[in-house]
Structures are given as structure tokens and as C-alpha cells.
Length: 142
Image (cartoon, rainbow, N blue to C red):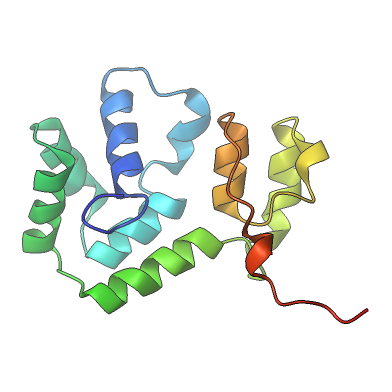
């Protein structure tokens, strides 16, 4: 997270890795799309312009400030809503049906009941364990 905006530094890291030919090919098709696209739309910045700015150098914080200047500067409430959307993508929304196939293709089908969101999938796919957000679900009647 940079400047309170979730996912933004990950997008910048992918741009840098791709420029050095070090980004795994599995990520190439989604450059500027999917979660990148959500982040770009939120900031009102085009991928090509951001890519050019990232490759010119600077810290993640400087690049986010560039986005605020050249796109838009969301307020704290908007950032909270965006972060919530990103963290919950794949949970009870149209992209939910994609989680199963993603888990199968990645050899992670055994984690189906633990993977509730696309962020969870990213964590599992990259060898990390996501937080267990089930502790915040409402209690169920017996």
C-alpha cells in the first residue's frame, strides 16, 4: 500500500519487472487490465502514461503523487471504498466464478474453501497465506 491506496505498488512493480524482462509470462496479459485497470480507472490515469512515468524513475510515493496531479486525487473516503472493493473482488460478485478455474489452473484447487477473493488467490498463487477474514463473518444460527 502506498498513500493508503492498495495494490498500487504491486502494479508499479509489475511495470518495472516487465521492462527488465523479469515478469513471469503469466502476468503479461493483465498488464493495464484487471486489477491494474481498476487502479488506473480509480486514479484516472492511462496505462501507457503511467508506464512511461514509472520507467522514468522515482519512488512509489512520487509516482502516486504524479497520478494525483495528472489524474485525480481521491479523498480518504473514496480510497477506503476502493480498497474495500479491491480486497473483496471475487467474493459474491460477477468475478466469483473465475476463482475455481484460476485455482485449478494453478494447481491450488485444494485451497478452494480457503480462497474467497481474487486477492486471496494472488496470495496463495505466490506462496503466501492470506489473512483469514472469516472471523469477521456474522455468526450463523445452529
